[in-house]
Image (cartoon, each protein chain N blue to C red):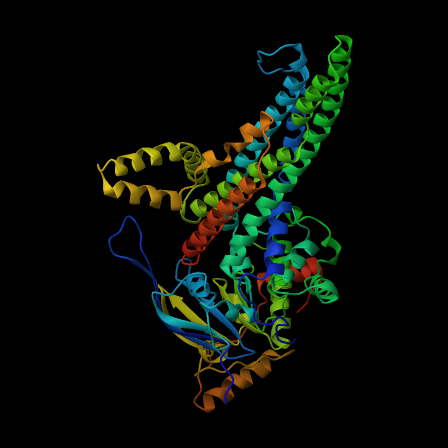
Length: 284
Length: 308
């Protein structure tokens, strides 16, 4: 018997009725996605392409017009499907009167945790998202990056096997964005399935194993990241301390074997990496 | 990481509902609603100075002040509990939707019925505790004023040479206006009325698009509830007179879905010193329980289908 996929979306269609239009608005159009346990899957697409609607349908926050969504084999419209899932919505707001630790305790209790188990879990999560120093500070005083991190912590409170993240770095500065990205990678290392949706392509490229591209509600492309972004008929060689003579020799060798020399030059870092190196000394 | 530690949760799980209720209570407390208690204390102090119009002799002066304290206190309690029951309930749900905190809650294994029940119970807990505090203040003030009135009136009666039996009658009359179990029953009736109103506001807020609409319609229902009995009686009489057989069915149907708030006017009799029968309080509790369950499950019926 094979294990149920972490996420199974089959022929999902979602239409919304609007008061101004007679025709319903089709936000998601026959989308099918399967995510296996342990994968980090990125759903990318422009604003309004249907990413968030797909996620909400998966979480049972909206009912599909047609099609079916399941989490680890459990129907998304049933409450028990949420036992194994954590969700971070886009731009989350939490109860401002609660502190970071109180927020995690509240969500933990909703999931049935209590006593020492809950206390330990709260401590562990605050350490994981690097908010130990702000544990007793009210959420109302948190920065955007801190809010996203406490949001991620609440999504993980019941130790779910699947985490759904909707634009996890929206509006977060590069340092905060890097922290969240590192957290996602950590989740992957722990074997947690991550379903991430974003329109920040570089970020998705850095963390995801597989990617789906959604546009106008349709899934237009899907596959492993390596397969999707590799240019099959080109090869990249990166050398350190190569002289001009060596490059000329390689170019001639390539020509002798019928290969076309396209370009040679210095590889460039990204502006984000430069920023992180200059501000935090982070040279990854 | 290991799998989720919790077993599959059933509906109406007490601990989870309790947590949501406690949270809703804290949320409201931090909105500084208890400031209203200061207003209540001021009204209570003022009621010591205001005497209700009375046509009896000077021996009734003490009882008049006691009635004034009860009247103002119970009136303020009614106002506070109904306003808070409606506005707080009408506010909590849309606020969670607007702030998207609802997404994070419903994305957990929390049945929507548990969420609604918890929110409603949180509001009711706040009203109950506020009423208990107000009741404590009122009872203490009444106790103090009753003792004062008893001393003054007994001394005056003795000075005028009243017979012992008449002084005893006077004592009983004054004590009946003081803190009694019937008065506690009246406070409970105030609470029960707020329970029904909060449940109505919850039902409205599940399909209303604005808090203002919920508040206005809830108050409208509150006022209709006070005239409902008269309207139904008229319809019943029309039915009995053979003018309309449908009128009686209509009257019965309306009574099933809309509460008759005139039933709660037993409070007025208690202010006048008439004892409240436990059976009457039991009837009020049963009626309130019926409407609470009716409106809560109707809310769930709508909320379960709602998309966010």
